[in-house]
Amino acid sequence: MSIQSLGYLRVRSSKLDEWETFARDVLGFMPAYGPDADAQYYRLDKYPYRFVVVPGDDAGLEAVGYEVGDDRDLAAVAARLEAAGVAVKLGDAEAAKERLVSGYLAFEDPAGVPVEIFYGPILDHVPVVTPKVSGFVTGDMGMGHVVVNVPEIDPAVDFYRDVLGFHSRNTWNFNAMSMAFLGCNPRHHTLAFGAGLPIPGQLIHFMVEAATIDDVGYAQDRCLDAGVTVSSSIGKHTNDHMISFYCVSPDGYMVEFGWGGLQLGEPEQLTTYQITKPSFWGHRPLKP
Ligand code: FE2
Image: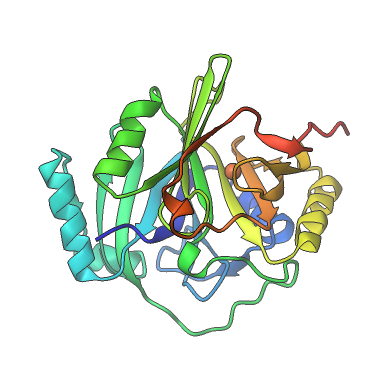
């Protein structure tokens, strides 16, 4: 029944024009058509979309979408959530069609993060074309990872491990700040929590992984050329060994653009460790 990967991310924003430039021209996502004419859909791979921006006055997370294998898995997740006392909203056929999936459910996690679980993306078989990026690393490992701000780390980690079957991968405690990283497939982490970070809103950052190191360098150049703030220069993380940089999205949270992330297999998948710094090198602020 377990969650397979981060399937999609839906965010809300009033800055649609800025998002179009940022997502298409800077990050190199492929614009796509979707059922909601007012929303922006972006593809990274064969899926109908991986990232959606829906119009709204208050910027934030609309849904973190996790994928399961089929309808039986979705029913099993629903049963586990209900047994844990979570109010589950089962998506009807019409709402599933709007998301271009075969079925889904929605709920809020204990920290109030809106979550959707889905199966069966509806493919259109149009080849993905991303002229600015040689390719995105997705497949069985999903869209990438997401990092959310929670009031308390432990209850969030317990919920995702005990109810949704995530594995604990590592923790990091630094002064008043702490983070925990969880995985559900070979990608080192699909989900991480931060507490005590001076971040408005729930979303701290999301990460996409490109196929080559050159993709990362070119993307950082596109940020600098477009006047997008690079909040952390190219560096290498100590936990997932990702070589990446961070830039600031139109709504203030960050996007990590990386390459070369660690892929874990058994038994490493079940190993947990503490890190004492986030990066071996780099990830420094870039002064203009
Ligand atoms: Fe990250």
